[in-house]
Image (cartoon, rainbow, N blue to C red; front, side, top):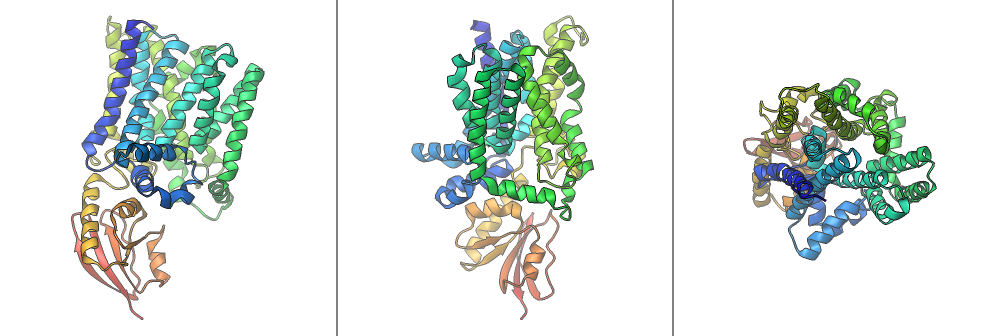
Length: 475
């Protein structure tokens, strides 16, 4: 490895670390990421209480975080943040290696492609709260890299096999995509060793799926239930999401895909699989069963790789010759994507700099419009902490608090000696008349819960973003 090459790796790694760390610093003391506040933090804080729950949710990544946190006696928040920042840096290094070693790009071109990818909406969004997805994707890309680089799979078997197994055990969707990609690649290549590797990994993945079949069974039931419509997953919303993530990448992506060397064929397989899965709503409309929004994000990550390569080809062939200086040409392409990625990562929730806010009515249900958000906005995070402190000090122990499902992580972490209830429809839960007395915590920015007529209500606390009502049922 040349000195210049080493510095290029360092540049890419440093930019990725800084890019992913700044949103965490800006949001401090509040965490960012929906799953961070509702999944990672509560589980790591109370790991033993969640042992049954996480056993059905591909627990490899969260178990790894717990091991680090418990053995090193480090606060879970620090472990979660440090892990995802380092993951982001690792992902950038894998992309640089792919660009430099497989696409045979020089250092400038490889740095361009790497930075181009880490500033993409889809990659940043994945790192926002889908940490185990990013973990699995990084490992999958690493395996693809070694498969394409090697002419003899026996030499890299010690890398591909364990890394591949960890990848499929880390996340269900990436595990499926990776397993199928290996099998299809082995068939196309007619390579028995790769085929054997693929079969073994598929068997491991299949056995793990069987032990985690309940979520899959629920999704299959959703897909077959035509009476249950999820209006969020309608064609218009999903098409808008697809265009927001991919429209600007598609022209150069097509160029990169068509001109891609044969040494990158294995990347085309997950590209087309994720593309087809992104449009699963055509066959199964108005259902979240096959998570088309997640597949759109995964597809966009692969498209970003081809698009970055396409831009390199267009610049090198003079189609983007704004300056005689090649570096300036690369910067002219890179700057708009750096601006878009930075605005998404760092701007406040209501910032006009973040153009994704224009599409808020269509895509806000699939992910954040900015990374400065967890399950609620950062100002609301401050308000919920104040409200929970008031509840802990001014309500009786064993009181029942009802509220939005988006608050469940905050309540798990901060509520003391009281029960928090949430449902997809809190009005229906109140109508069940199971509770004679409870408190209703409402986010003022969300649709209010309709309180049945057989409940007396009294406002007991409110702040800038929340209101707490004391409800008593009239017998």
